Figure 1 (cartoon, rainbow, N blue to C red):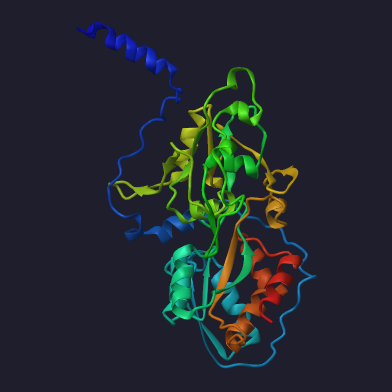
Figure 2 (tube, rainbow, N blue to C red):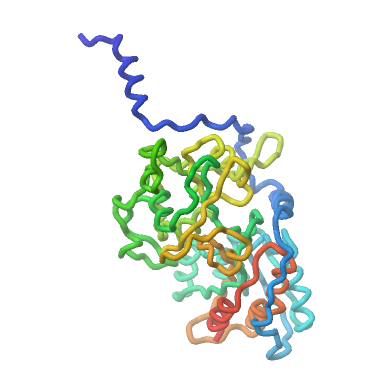
Length: 393
Protein backbone atom coordinates (compact mmCIF):
# COMPACT_ATOMS: atom_id res chain seq x y z
CA UNK A 1 0.00 0.00 0.00
CA UNK A 2 1.27 3.46 -0.94
CA UNK A 3 2.34 5.81 1.86
CA UNK A 4 -0.14 8.70 1.51
CA UNK A 5 1.87 10.76 4.02
CA UNK A 6 4.56 11.23 1.36
CA UNK A 7 2.20 12.84 -1.17
CA UNK A 8 2.36 16.40 0.24
CA UNK A 9 6.15 16.17 0.39
CA UNK A 10 6.36 14.95 -3.19
CA UNK A 11 3.99 17.69 -4.35
CA UNK A 12 6.02 20.34 -2.54
CA UNK A 13 9.25 19.07 -4.07
CA UNK A 14 7.73 19.00 -7.54
CA UNK A 15 6.42 22.54 -7.17
CA UNK A 16 9.90 23.77 -6.28
CA UNK A 17 11.12 22.61 -9.70
CA UNK A 18 8.53 24.65 -11.58
CA UNK A 19 9.36 28.16 -12.89
CA UNK A 20 8.31 30.70 -10.30
CA UNK A 21 6.15 33.60 -11.40
CA UNK A 22 6.26 36.74 -9.30
CA UNK A 23 3.29 37.40 -7.09
CA UNK A 24 0.38 38.68 -9.12
CA UNK A 25 -0.27 42.40 -8.81
CA UNK A 26 -3.11 43.52 -6.58
CA UNK A 27 -6.57 42.60 -7.81
CA UNK A 28 -8.14 44.90 -10.39
CA UNK A 29 -11.72 46.20 -10.00
CA UNK A 30 -14.37 43.62 -10.83
CA UNK A 31 -15.39 43.16 -14.45
CA UNK A 32 -19.07 44.05 -14.96
CA UNK A 33 -19.31 41.47 -17.73
CA UNK A 34 -20.71 43.81 -20.38
CA UNK A 35 -19.23 45.00 -23.67
CA UNK A 36 -17.28 48.23 -23.34
CA UNK A 37 -18.33 49.09 -26.91
CA UNK A 38 -21.87 49.73 -25.73
CA UNK A 39 -20.52 52.43 -23.42
CA UNK A 40 -19.10 55.93 -23.93
CA UNK A 41 -15.82 54.86 -25.51
CA UNK A 42 -15.58 58.12 -27.46
CA UNK A 43 -15.26 59.99 -24.18
CA UNK A 44 -12.61 57.51 -23.06
CA UNK A 45 -10.69 57.96 -26.31
CA UNK A 46 -10.79 61.74 -26.16
CA UNK A 47 -9.64 61.72 -22.54
CA UNK A 48 -6.62 59.53 -23.24
CA UNK A 49 -5.94 61.15 -26.62
CA UNK A 50 -5.12 64.37 -24.79
CA UNK A 51 -2.09 62.68 -23.16
CA UNK A 52 1.13 62.83 -25.16
CA UNK A 53 1.38 64.25 -28.66
CA UNK A 54 3.87 66.71 -30.11
CA UNK A 55 4.24 70.32 -31.21
CA UNK A 56 7.16 69.80 -33.59
CA UNK A 57 6.74 70.88 -37.20
CA UNK A 58 8.75 68.99 -39.79
CA UNK A 59 9.90 70.61 -43.00
CA UNK A 60 7.37 69.36 -45.58
CA UNK A 61 8.81 71.32 -48.50
CA UNK A 62 9.93 68.12 -50.27
CA UNK A 63 6.28 67.06 -50.57
CA UNK A 64 4.19 68.26 -53.51
CA UNK A 65 1.74 71.10 -53.03
CA UNK A 66 -1.87 70.21 -53.75
CA UNK A 67 -3.14 71.79 -56.95
CA UNK A 68 -6.60 70.68 -58.18
CA UNK A 69 -6.43 68.94 -61.55
CA UNK A 70 -10.04 70.03 -62.05
CA UNK A 71 -12.87 71.59 -60.05
CA UNK A 72 -15.41 68.94 -59.12
CA UNK A 73 -18.87 68.79 -57.59
CA UNK A 74 -20.23 65.92 -55.56
CA UNK A 75 -20.02 63.97 -52.32
CA UNK A 76 -17.12 61.97 -50.90
CA UNK A 77 -18.11 59.25 -48.41
CA UNK A 78 -15.41 58.33 -45.88
CA UNK A 79 -15.97 55.45 -43.46
CA UNK A 80 -13.94 53.91 -40.69
CA UNK A 81 -11.37 55.39 -38.34
CA UNK A 82 -13.18 56.91 -35.35
CA UNK A 83 -10.04 58.83 -34.38
CA UNK A 84 -10.74 61.28 -37.20
CA UNK A 85 -13.66 62.54 -35.10
CA UNK A 86 -12.26 61.71 -31.67
CA UNK A 87 -9.52 64.19 -32.50
CA UNK A 88 -9.32 67.13 -34.90
CA UNK A 89 -7.82 65.65 -38.05
CA UNK A 90 -11.12 64.89 -39.77
CA UNK A 91 -12.27 68.50 -39.49
CA UNK A 92 -8.83 69.83 -40.47
CA UNK A 93 -8.87 67.78 -43.68
CA UNK A 94 -12.47 68.67 -44.40
CA UNK A 95 -12.02 72.42 -43.92
CA UNK A 96 -8.69 72.73 -45.74
CA UNK A 97 -9.78 70.60 -48.70
CA UNK A 98 -12.90 72.76 -49.05
CA UNK A 99 -10.68 75.75 -49.74
CA UNK A 100 -9.42 74.01 -52.90
CA UNK A 101 -12.55 72.08 -53.86
CA UNK A 102 -15.63 74.05 -52.66
CA UNK A 103 -17.95 71.88 -54.74
CA UNK A 104 -17.06 68.65 -52.92
CA UNK A 105 -18.85 67.72 -49.71
CA UNK A 106 -17.23 65.20 -47.38
CA UNK A 107 -19.55 62.89 -45.46
CA UNK A 108 -17.88 61.15 -42.54
CA UNK A 109 -19.21 57.88 -41.12
CA UNK A 110 -16.73 57.01 -38.38
CA UNK A 111 -18.09 54.49 -35.87
CA UNK A 112 -14.92 52.35 -35.87
CA UNK A 113 -11.97 51.51 -38.09
CA UNK A 114 -13.42 48.01 -38.39
CA UNK A 115 -16.00 49.44 -40.83
CA UNK A 116 -13.43 50.77 -43.33
CA UNK A 117 -13.21 47.83 -45.74
CA UNK A 118 -16.70 46.39 -45.09
CA UNK A 119 -18.20 49.76 -46.11
CA UNK A 120 -16.30 49.52 -49.41
CA UNK A 121 -17.57 45.98 -49.90
CA UNK A 122 -21.16 47.13 -49.33
CA UNK A 123 -20.75 50.05 -51.72
CA UNK A 124 -21.54 52.78 -49.21
CA UNK A 125 -17.99 54.22 -48.98
CA UNK A 126 -15.61 55.83 -51.46
CA UNK A 127 -12.71 55.68 -48.97
CA UNK A 128 -12.23 53.55 -45.90
CA UNK A 129 -9.63 54.58 -43.32
CA UNK A 130 -8.09 52.12 -40.93
CA UNK A 131 -4.93 50.44 -39.80
CA UNK A 132 -3.77 47.48 -41.90
CA UNK A 133 -6.69 45.45 -43.25
CA UNK A 134 -7.19 42.12 -41.52
CA UNK A 135 -7.60 38.81 -43.33
CA UNK A 136 -11.41 38.72 -43.16
CA UNK A 137 -11.57 42.25 -44.62
CA UNK A 138 -9.43 41.17 -47.55
CA UNK A 139 -11.31 37.94 -48.11
CA UNK A 140 -14.72 39.65 -48.13
CA UNK A 141 -13.45 42.30 -50.58
CA UNK A 142 -11.73 39.81 -52.88
CA UNK A 143 -14.65 37.37 -52.84
CA UNK A 144 -16.96 40.22 -53.85
CA UNK A 145 -14.82 41.95 -56.49
CA UNK A 146 -12.15 39.34 -57.36
CA UNK A 147 -9.23 41.74 -57.09
CA UNK A 148 -7.32 43.18 -54.11
CA UNK A 149 -8.35 46.31 -52.26
CA UNK A 150 -6.13 49.31 -53.03
CA UNK A 151 -4.15 50.38 -49.94
CA UNK A 152 -2.61 53.85 -49.59
CA UNK A 153 -0.56 54.81 -46.51
CA UNK A 154 -1.61 58.31 -45.41
CA UNK A 155 -0.03 58.70 -41.95
CA UNK A 156 2.50 57.10 -39.63
CA UNK A 157 1.14 56.02 -36.27
CA UNK A 158 1.78 58.14 -33.20
CA UNK A 159 4.83 58.16 -30.99
CA UNK A 160 3.04 58.23 -27.64
CA UNK A 161 -0.72 58.82 -28.02
CA UNK A 162 -2.88 55.93 -26.90
CA UNK A 163 -5.34 54.88 -29.61
CA UNK A 164 -3.68 56.82 -32.42
CA UNK A 165 -1.80 53.71 -33.65
CA UNK A 166 1.26 54.18 -31.42
CA UNK A 167 4.44 52.28 -32.14
CA UNK A 168 4.74 48.98 -30.29
CA UNK A 169 6.96 48.99 -27.19
CA UNK A 170 8.84 45.98 -25.84
CA UNK A 171 9.00 46.48 -22.06
CA UNK A 172 10.68 44.66 -19.19
CA UNK A 173 10.94 45.19 -15.45
CA UNK A 174 13.16 48.13 -14.47
CA UNK A 175 15.62 45.79 -12.74
CA UNK A 176 16.19 43.73 -15.86
CA UNK A 177 19.73 44.32 -17.26
CA UNK A 178 18.61 43.80 -20.87
CA UNK A 179 18.68 47.01 -22.94
CA UNK A 180 18.05 45.90 -26.50
CA UNK A 181 16.50 43.13 -28.58
CA UNK A 182 16.30 42.17 -32.25
CA UNK A 183 13.04 41.67 -34.14
CA UNK A 184 13.98 38.05 -34.79
CA UNK A 185 14.54 37.59 -31.05
CA UNK A 186 11.14 39.17 -30.35
CA UNK A 187 9.66 36.54 -32.65
CA UNK A 188 11.54 33.90 -30.67
CA UNK A 189 10.14 35.20 -27.38
CA UNK A 190 6.54 35.95 -28.40
CA UNK A 191 6.10 33.32 -31.10
CA UNK A 192 6.43 29.60 -31.56
CA UNK A 193 7.06 27.00 -34.27
CA UNK A 194 4.75 27.49 -37.24
CA UNK A 195 4.02 26.11 -40.71
CA UNK A 196 3.38 29.46 -42.40
CA UNK A 197 1.79 32.89 -42.26
CA UNK A 198 -0.19 35.43 -44.26
CA UNK A 199 1.04 38.44 -46.18
CA UNK A 200 -2.22 40.21 -46.93
CA UNK A 201 -4.44 37.38 -48.14
CA UNK A 202 -1.62 35.21 -49.52
CA UNK A 203 -0.34 32.27 -47.46
CA UNK A 204 3.42 31.72 -47.34
CA UNK A 205 5.00 28.50 -46.13
CA UNK A 206 8.65 29.35 -46.80
CA UNK A 207 11.07 30.59 -44.13
CA UNK A 208 10.71 32.83 -42.14
CA UNK A 209 6.91 32.51 -42.37
CA UNK A 210 7.42 28.94 -41.28
CA UNK A 211 10.04 28.07 -38.68
CA UNK A 212 10.89 25.38 -36.19
CA UNK A 213 11.00 25.27 -32.38
CA UNK A 214 14.78 25.68 -32.39
CA UNK A 215 14.23 29.44 -32.79
CA UNK A 216 12.02 29.66 -29.71
CA UNK A 217 13.43 31.77 -26.87
CA UNK A 218 12.07 30.81 -23.47
CA UNK A 219 14.76 31.70 -20.91
CA UNK A 220 16.77 34.86 -20.26
CA UNK A 221 20.16 33.28 -20.94
CA UNK A 222 19.00 32.79 -24.55
CA UNK A 223 19.03 36.60 -24.73
CA UNK A 224 22.55 36.78 -23.30
CA UNK A 225 21.80 37.30 -19.61
CA UNK A 226 23.94 35.44 -17.09
CA UNK A 227 24.22 34.91 -13.34
CA UNK A 228 20.91 34.84 -11.50
CA UNK A 229 19.03 35.28 -14.82
CA UNK A 230 20.44 32.16 -16.48
CA UNK A 231 17.78 29.50 -16.92
CA UNK A 232 14.98 31.70 -15.61
CA UNK A 233 11.76 31.73 -17.68
CA UNK A 234 10.59 34.73 -19.66
CA UNK A 235 7.03 35.65 -18.67
CA UNK A 236 5.44 36.96 -21.86
CA UNK A 237 2.32 39.09 -22.15
CA UNK A 238 0.52 42.05 -23.66
CA UNK A 239 -2.87 42.90 -25.10
CA UNK A 240 -5.31 40.08 -25.83
CA UNK A 241 -4.44 38.35 -29.08
CA UNK A 242 -7.80 39.09 -30.72
CA UNK A 243 -7.31 42.85 -30.48
CA UNK A 244 -6.53 44.76 -33.65
CA UNK A 245 -3.14 45.85 -32.31
CA UNK A 246 -2.21 42.24 -31.55
CA UNK A 247 -3.14 41.22 -35.08
CA UNK A 248 -0.77 43.90 -36.39
CA UNK A 249 1.93 42.75 -33.97
CA UNK A 250 1.46 39.21 -35.27
CA UNK A 251 1.69 40.41 -38.89
CA UNK A 252 4.83 42.42 -38.16
CA UNK A 253 6.66 40.08 -35.77
CA UNK A 254 5.07 36.63 -35.97
CA UNK A 255 4.97 36.73 -39.78
CA UNK A 256 1.20 36.71 -40.04
CA UNK A 257 0.93 33.33 -38.35
CA UNK A 258 -1.24 34.22 -35.37
CA UNK A 259 0.73 31.68 -33.33
CA UNK A 260 1.77 33.02 -29.92
CA UNK A 261 3.98 31.61 -27.20
CA UNK A 262 2.36 29.19 -24.78
CA UNK A 263 1.38 30.83 -21.50
CA UNK A 264 1.03 34.30 -23.04
CA UNK A 265 -0.52 36.53 -20.34
CA UNK A 266 -3.26 38.53 -22.06
CA UNK A 267 -4.92 41.71 -20.81
CA UNK A 268 -7.87 43.57 -22.26
CA UNK A 269 -9.97 46.66 -21.61
CA UNK A 270 -13.09 46.02 -19.55
CA UNK A 271 -15.71 48.01 -17.73
CA UNK A 272 -16.53 47.96 -14.02
CA UNK A 273 -19.95 48.03 -12.37
CA UNK A 274 -19.35 51.72 -11.76
CA UNK A 275 -18.90 52.39 -15.48
CA UNK A 276 -15.13 52.89 -15.41
CA UNK A 277 -13.01 51.43 -18.21
CA UNK A 278 -10.00 49.53 -16.86
CA UNK A 279 -7.33 49.62 -19.55
CA UNK A 280 -5.20 46.68 -20.59
CA UNK A 281 -2.24 49.07 -20.66
CA UNK A 282 -2.36 49.85 -16.95
CA UNK A 283 -3.03 46.23 -16.07
CA UNK A 284 0.10 45.30 -18.02
CA UNK A 285 2.07 48.07 -16.31
CA UNK A 286 1.28 46.65 -12.89
CA UNK A 287 2.08 43.09 -13.98
CA UNK A 288 5.52 44.01 -15.36
CA UNK A 289 6.44 46.14 -12.35
CA UNK A 290 5.60 43.18 -10.08
CA UNK A 291 7.47 40.53 -12.11
CA UNK A 292 11.24 40.77 -12.72
CA UNK A 293 10.99 38.08 -15.40
CA UNK A 294 8.28 39.78 -17.46
CA UNK A 295 8.59 40.90 -21.09
CA UNK A 296 5.44 42.40 -22.64
CA UNK A 297 4.51 44.32 -25.72
CA UNK A 298 2.75 47.44 -24.43
CA UNK A 299 1.31 50.82 -25.35
CA UNK A 300 2.73 54.20 -24.29
CA UNK A 301 0.10 54.34 -21.54
CA UNK A 302 1.81 51.37 -19.88
CA UNK A 303 5.15 53.07 -19.36
CA UNK A 304 6.05 54.12 -15.83
CA UNK A 305 8.87 54.06 -13.27
CA UNK A 306 8.64 50.27 -12.79
CA UNK A 307 9.28 49.52 -16.47
CA UNK A 308 12.08 49.83 -19.00
CA UNK A 309 11.67 49.77 -22.77
CA UNK A 310 14.12 48.10 -25.09
CA UNK A 311 15.82 49.43 -28.20
CA UNK A 312 14.87 47.31 -31.22
CA UNK A 313 16.84 46.05 -34.20
CA UNK A 314 15.07 45.30 -37.49
CA UNK A 315 14.84 41.80 -38.97
CA UNK A 316 17.51 42.78 -41.50
CA UNK A 317 20.02 43.65 -38.79
CA UNK A 318 21.65 47.03 -38.34
CA UNK A 319 21.61 49.26 -35.27
CA UNK A 320 19.41 48.88 -32.24
CA UNK A 321 17.07 51.88 -32.39
CA UNK A 322 15.39 53.54 -29.43
CA UNK A 323 11.80 54.69 -29.80
CA UNK A 324 11.78 58.48 -30.10
CA UNK A 325 9.55 60.97 -31.88
CA UNK A 326 12.13 61.21 -34.66
CA UNK A 327 12.75 57.47 -35.09
CA UNK A 328 9.03 56.72 -35.27
CA UNK A 329 8.51 59.56 -37.76
CA UNK A 330 11.35 58.46 -40.05
CA UNK A 331 10.48 54.79 -39.48
CA UNK A 332 13.95 53.72 -38.38
CA UNK A 333 12.34 52.36 -35.20
CA UNK A 334 11.11 49.02 -36.59
CA UNK A 335 7.87 48.72 -34.62
CA UNK A 336 6.07 51.79 -36.03
CA UNK A 337 2.44 51.58 -37.18
CA UNK A 338 0.54 53.15 -40.06
CA UNK A 339 -2.86 54.42 -41.15
CA UNK A 340 -4.27 53.68 -44.60
CA UNK A 341 -6.92 54.75 -47.06
CA UNK A 342 -8.61 51.80 -48.75
CA UNK A 343 -10.11 52.23 -52.21
CA UNK A 344 -12.10 50.04 -54.58
CA UNK A 345 -10.14 50.32 -57.80
CA UNK A 346 -10.57 47.68 -60.47
CA UNK A 347 -7.33 46.69 -62.26
CA UNK A 348 -6.57 48.95 -65.21
CA UNK A 349 -9.34 51.38 -64.28
CA UNK A 350 -8.86 54.99 -63.13
CA UNK A 351 -9.69 56.06 -59.60
CA UNK A 352 -12.93 57.99 -59.20
CA UNK A 353 -12.01 61.69 -59.78
CA UNK A 354 -13.39 63.00 -56.47
CA UNK A 355 -11.65 60.25 -54.52
CA UNK A 356 -8.41 60.85 -56.41
CA UNK A 357 -8.44 64.58 -55.66
CA UNK A 358 -8.87 64.01 -51.93
CA UNK A 359 -6.15 61.35 -51.75
CA UNK A 360 -3.77 63.65 -53.63
CA UNK A 361 -4.63 66.42 -51.16
CA UNK A 362 -3.93 64.21 -48.13
CA UNK A 363 -0.55 63.18 -49.59
CA UNK A 364 0.39 66.82 -50.24
CA UNK A 365 2.14 69.39 -48.05
CA UNK A 366 -1.26 70.78 -47.15
CA UNK A 367 -2.78 67.43 -46.14
CA UNK A 368 0.25 66.27 -44.20
CA UNK A 369 0.45 69.61 -42.42
CA UNK A 370 -3.05 68.94 -41.07
CA UNK A 371 -1.63 65.78 -39.50
CA UNK A 372 1.20 67.57 -37.72
CA UNK A 373 -1.12 70.42 -36.74
CA UNK A 374 -3.18 67.92 -34.75
CA UNK A 375 0.04 66.48 -33.26
CA UNK A 376 -0.98 62.83 -32.83
CA UNK A 377 -0.42 60.82 -35.99
CA UNK A 378 2.89 61.64 -37.69
CA UNK A 379 3.28 63.04 -41.22
CA UNK A 380 4.78 60.85 -43.92
CA UNK A 381 8.34 61.28 -45.13
CA UNK A 382 8.93 62.30 -48.77
CA UNK A 383 10.08 58.76 -49.58
CA UNK A 384 6.84 57.23 -48.34
CA UNK A 385 4.70 59.86 -50.11
CA UNK A 386 6.48 59.14 -53.40
CA UNK A 387 5.71 55.42 -53.02
CA UNK A 388 2.04 56.12 -52.35
CA UNK A 389 1.62 58.54 -55.25
CA UNK A 390 2.85 55.85 -57.64
CA UNK A 391 -0.12 53.70 -56.59
CA UNK A 392 -2.46 56.39 -57.92
CA UNK A 393 -1.09 56.26 -61.45
